[in-house]
Image (cartoon, rainbow, N blue to C red):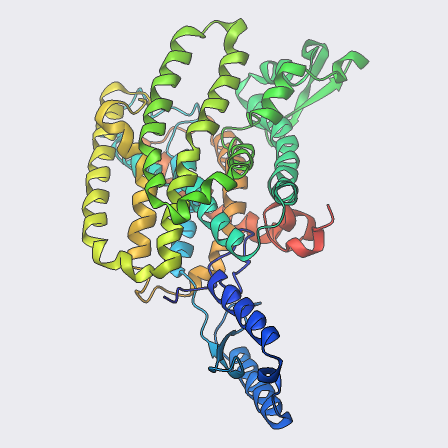
Length: 487
């Protein structure tokens, strides 16, 4: 069975050039030709004819609407004697539905974090009807939680490994360069950028105490610029970093509320040899259900028994390890799904109504979760019947999109999708800027939340576009990687 090639590659903008099935077919042809030397005697005219066909196919492919870097794949057929008979260009397809999901997912992430008050709360002092819109926006945007980005990245990892696996150490180094180096850059940025909002709302000393071992020897200047406080170094000891805090920043991704994604994704990619078993044994993908249930129970145990301040560092580390171990279920599930797509994506199409029904049930569970938030006036952790739909909807969305991948999705999403990573990285800055500049603004919840959402969307998209024009910052957001592949 032929399957679509040219999926968006693991590195943003990269595409899969050849499928494993065609590579294996070509290897068989080479071995057959080597065993029968007489079959390799092809006339010069036949060679020229094949060469002319290849050049014509290349020129035809160059004039098509393929993405940059995508050439026509050659489907090499052989005659009964092992002789190369035809080199036929095959049209490369791209799952635009997945590109569309990545585009909307990054916008939903901004929506999720922009539907709160300056303290990050769901407007607890407002009336239930008044805060209905921001809470509804938060609930809808939660379908694009970090778990959705995990499953999409793991699916693209499966595509990338199908093209080239290499040694395990080589893959680890590749993923470390791709994920951890940008993570370190943005960690340093967010560690100190938090002082911007902290200075405006009066908790800058707490942030300094986190960053530095002797944060109390920093003295704040009375003058500020755009709400950014100025500080004077009063003692050289003030430059000594706090080991525990920097361990959280780098090892646990706690420099900002969204920075946990990159180190966790790197840890999940380390288990790719395990995931690859699910390609040929798709029943392994069902392991995601008991693993998620185990995570729920173990998280409750850790939060209930290690809440003391002196034990929180151990608890946070244990939570990351539990998350890494249980989220391997996502990897098994996505590689199992990739196995179906690899064999023939069309076999998922008859199940589209089933996927749609399950997706509807998951959204109903999300609605119940939103009602609990409205009722309590604070964020409520999903539990009970809400838990599995809350963490499993990302898989249902991927299956649904794959089942309708043959629909005529707008190709513009192929160009927009690579910028999703940059939107994910930069949006907290824009939200903090809005909170600082609107401090003391007496507006209704509806006006405030709507203004915050629109501001965050507009400024984040503009910032990502401008940064993408600069080589270093483009590299840090997963764009124009070739210029920085030596880092």
